[in-house]
Image (cartoon, rainbow, N blue to C red):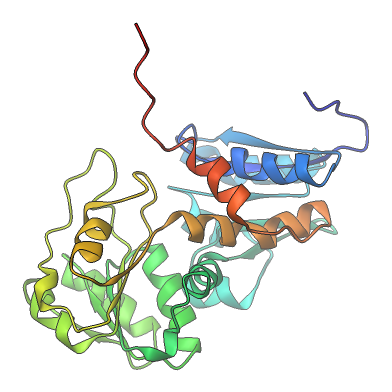
Length: 284
């Protein structure tokens, strides 16, 4: 067990609920690897208490925090300053407390791009079809557009898809019922919905329509192999799992809070993935 001192650096993840988050396991791995006098805590905070909790953490000496559902828009609203990525997406997943100010950033887009690179996927081979229109879709769409990738957005609620398209220059909206046929016109598919997540129904998508060589990325990481990723592999397409995005998006916050830029590698992936694998049956 780590021995905490009066110099311990403090950070954590704000969510409601927050027990599902793998961020404490992830950051704990890095803290131990680099021998840092620091701790990263799960911080369950009700939505109505969010802004008070953020100011309280800063007053208590925390270096910052990650933000997960349902607080990303509330975090955007309570910041004193915003990094460009947060301003572009309208959501914050990383808070830094500096000089009595709350500074908000959004690292989801950068984490997604880094995960593509780790799988040797070149985003410039777009266009990209994004399924979903929430905060993750906004961050990923903005990051891909920064690389001059043409974006299509397809969501069950067309109003939300159109609202997101207005935030991303040049983005177009594709009707949800046309999602199967649209696959033929795109080189990258990104599922940002919760469909396929443990406890949720699978994503209904016929990959037989996919363009040859399409890369299929799913930001869901529980389970590690979603039905969409399994279908992509069966169709001979390149499958990009969501756990890598989680790992890469965490690195900028860790560097800001603990003063060390961490490495995302196979050892980290295996450690975090071990917490997502089904438990082995008991012998005997």
